[in-house]
Amino acid sequence: MGTNPVLVVHGGAWAIPDEFAERSILGVKNAVKSGFAVLEMGGSSMKAVEIAVRALEDDTVFDAGHGAVLNADGYVELDAIIMNGKTLAAGAVSCIRNISNPVAFACSVLEKTPYVMLTGTGANQFAEKLGIPQVPVEELVTDHAKAEWEQYRKYKQTVKSLFNTELVHDTVGAVAIDCEGNMACATSTGGITNKMVGRVGDTPVIGSGGYADNLVGAVSATGHGESIMKVTLARLILFHMEQGKTPEEAADSSLHYMEKRVHGRGGVIIVSKTGEWTARFTTKRMAWAGIKEGVLMYGLNPGETIQEIINPPK
Image 1 (tube, rainbow, N blue to C red):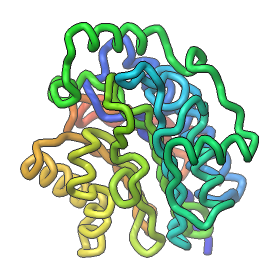
Image 2: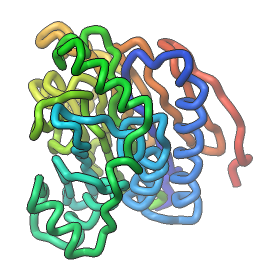
Image 3: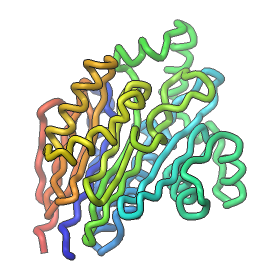
């Protein structure tokens, strides 16, 4: 079919402090380039979103994989999802410990089991069986995350107050359409600092943290997990697109609905089955980047879009 491939990534919607701004932009640009290289060579959207999200997980400026935050017991618990828009096959993992690339593990769940989601101990045992290396907590946790955890424990701040101040690192994600018109999404997170042990956010929940369907589009969401789950944000956006809204209109009306109905803020990246794409958010900032037809676009602040020509389209 010859669809023009598109890849969009985000590095989480929150009040990104200025000291992280430049690294966040650099991180999403690097990730979108590495994922798009897969699409340019005729690779699948599934591979492209996995590669892009792995790049974000490996970057300590984001809270997923390396750079993850600590839960109330001082452990790292990670969640991820990947979904194939052609078959609606999905793989998700939640509350997994000490694995540096949760998205790759979510892929294994999709490819090697008949299930959609594995969680906790069972997931970790399966990872061991597959020979996925466990890394020490120290390798995943930055000094910044440790300091943040100590601070929250001292003041016993609640997860809700953290979200209201938007001081929370969040999630990373990617959406893509490949040359064959197949779509995919992937989302990965290290959660919220000092979250209750066993707390799972929206990220690995199908239809909330992400959804992909060749008939409509692909979405990856970020923001206040509980709010996103209550409105099944990713699926809600695709529902609006099925009704004829553009990705931008669908994103804005869904994010507005989430804020009005459950007082939650967040952000989304979307690509439609025709290759239209957008990145929208209601938080103070969201690092995002997208590539289509040789043009790289990226931004961090509301209403900001910076454009770079990369390769002239062949």
